[in-house]
Amino acid sequence: EISDITSDQIAQGRRAHELDREHVFHSWQAQGPFNPMTVLKTEGSYVWDGEGNKLIDLSSQLVNTNVGHQHPKVVAAIVEQAGKIATIAPQHVNDARSEAARLIASHTPGDLDKIFFTNGGADAVEHAVRMARLHTGKHKVLSAYRSYHGGTHLAVNITGDPRRFASDAGADGIVHFFPAYPYRSYFGAATEAEETERALKHLEDLIILEGAGNIAALILESIPGTAGIYVPPAGYMAGVRELTRKYGIVYIADEVMAGFGRSGEWFAVNHWDITPDLLTFAKGVNSGYVPLGGVAISQEIFETFRERVYPGGLTYSGHPLACAAAVATIKAMEDEDLVANAKRLGDEIIGPRLAQFKADHPSVGDVRGTGVFWAIELVVNRETREPLAAYGGSSPEMNQVIAAARAAGLLPFANFNRLHVVPAMNIPDEVLIEALDKLEQALLVADGFVK
Ligand code: PMP
Image 1 (spheres, rainbow, N blue to C red):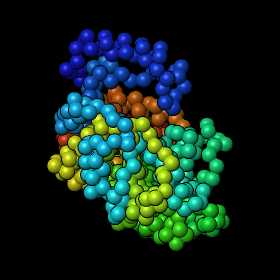
Image 2 (cartoon, rainbow, N blue to C red):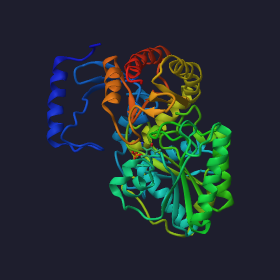
Image 3 (tube, rainbow, N blue to C red):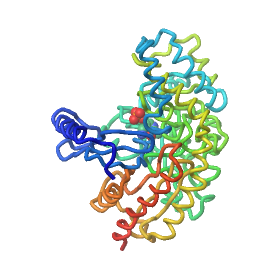
Image 4 (cartoon, rainbow, N blue to C red):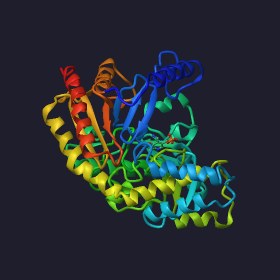
């Protein structure tokens, strides 16, 4: 569908693409063959590509634009703030930051009422780990295989997916454990209850063998996102919380992707009524309109730094433009009841449709999720569960599925053998339904690879 885009804009986009290939060094890519998509315009649930094609954004730009593109109130708040105080060093009070911290603390669980601001998710993870190490006087950090915690040195080493191999031998003191992942159980579990029991037994054994007295923190995505939106089975998260209490380990909930309403709750830990010691956030906090992340800190850990200097900081911590965007985003979520809407979209539209996909398409191995946070796992054989692309890799077949989604008018978020259904929390019902119809066309292509 060509709309709203002039030939001048398309020409400008082509020039931008040439300059990009000449001067821009891209994340996670071999620079030579990479042919990035140009975006000429974004609005609501849509993006327009370099040829002027209007695509439904089912990716939320790395699961980020929780209130959609160009939300008028968030844009206006940034413009207004820029006219007042565009930047200020972090040691000074600014009203945007104070109000953002108040609003964030009003939604975080339990007593996580002190907010340290960062520029994004990876540095939030780095600081949460530093706080835990200083608080406990211990060093080791436990994290899950099949996780993603960021691209900086420590964060990528904490990450469980193969992207960390590039920085091996990296940060010391990080130990990975196998998470509960019922569809591809590491424990040979046949049921979710068995998976929970065995995964918790594995984790406790690992804590004992690593020496509880040496472990500062356990970091876990409340619902692992990039690694496949595999919602933990009943009892697992409560069990993890219990183990961290039992062994005096700081529990860091990484909610960079799952937080701020995406799962149909303000924070995903709310699904299990648990309160971590530290919670990392970014992305949805301000819909990514200006880079922002942070750590929400419990009273107990805050007390460690009441008299003792916290050794860490960032020039842009609590940046007024980012915080003004956060204030406007959180208010929009409240005023427009978007968290409840995300839950409704998951319960009434995405969940049932994905279940139908699983019934109708032999390439669909597993579907799972909550709110506007879902994944479809594509396989070439349902019995063996052989993935359409290996974990940590891509395949020509998977690339064809992604191309089919694009050709149908969709911008999907695809990762390894998965298609993620992660639209904005305010995507109109009829647009979401249309997007899922388009997605089904890509599944027909995937069905062709089933053997
Ligand atoms: N933690 C999680 C759970 C994430 O999903 C991400 C980003 N996908 C990060 C941390 C890193 O965030 P950033 O890219 O903002 O550094």
